Image 1 (cartoon, helix red, strand yellow):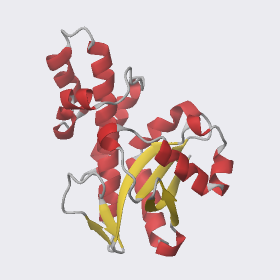
Image 2: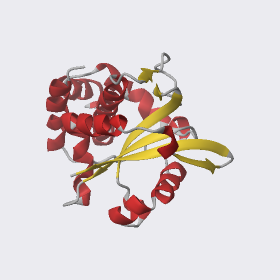
Image 3: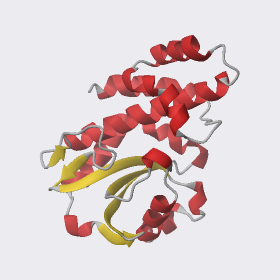
Image 4: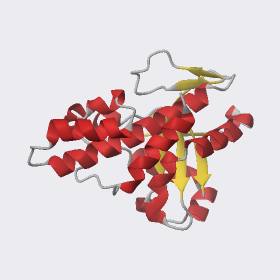
Length: 211
């Protein structure tokens, strides 16, 4: 993947407000699944206009598609960054929602997420209470087809100057590459957080991406 080109495309999205309009759901996902095959931002805008401009809920679908495209391509880049490392093995089934890759034979899904306002506590507090934040992230994760209770690495984005701008850090692919690479250089399985959630044994960790 050309990370520089992708970063350039993702940053074009930053000119538009980050508004969902509706909660993520399977029905809207089906309507906007073209985002998986649409790499260039201009092509995305054209596709949205072509397919939905005459619909009553055009604005909601447009916002939904813009956000899904942005989140998907950022996450895909982060996944590939992980898989470039020598002791990380990509999962062969790309449609498996539980596993993106293996690190030292441990299966992981990964999720890039902004620091959640709903956590109701500060970033410094979360740094020193990692398990509490991880539990919150599992308990409040997306529902329906996205929900699972398997091993996960959370890349948590923080803009220390403005919490409303956390989401823009998903476009900083080259910066995220440095952060993930630094994490993997010191990865040790015993440093993972192991716990039980809803009767599921889980290994998880938080990778902080703070600007």
